[in-house]
Amino acid sequence: MEIQFTPIVTQKQASKLAKVAEKIYYDYYAGLIGEENIKYMLAEYQTANSVIEQIRTRKHNYYEIFCDGEFCGYFDIMYEGRRIILDKIYVSKEYRKKGIARYVVAHIEKLCRSVNANKIIVDILVKNEAACIAYKHLGFVKLKEGVMTLGNGFQTEYAEMEKKIK
Image (cartoon, rainbow, N blue to C red):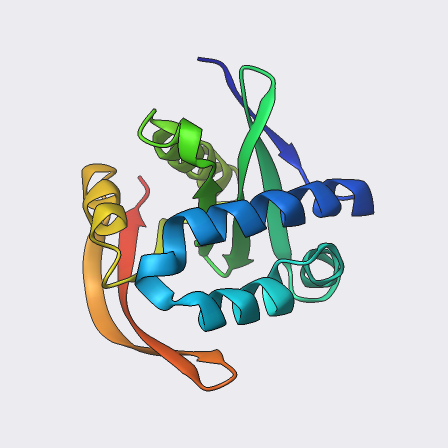
């Protein structure tokens, strides 16, 4: 499988992301965070306009993920000092468990080296056991657990994980 990443910079790309985000959220997160929280998260953070706003004002860097030429998901990173924050990786249901996260993390590791960053940080829902296991397999270690406020009264338990880059 050929995996490619393209930075999201246009409204058209952000619109495509928003459509895929809705499907991914309902496919994956319904049992983890509930429908009301999904609706809030999509409306607040994953509309085309909010993605473009995050890119312009909050230093987010969204990337499309293509698998053999098909748009199969996206990820978002932020540069913060000597670390890169992996804010999200979302992959369409039919492409999960095919090693795509491994390609994404390898790409982020290269970015780390190019900007002299020494770690990747990711926050994961504690209830998302599959993601916790996957990140451990990718070399991340848990630093701490806590409660994260998502907005609109929603809170969730999370684990902060880190991968050191040499």
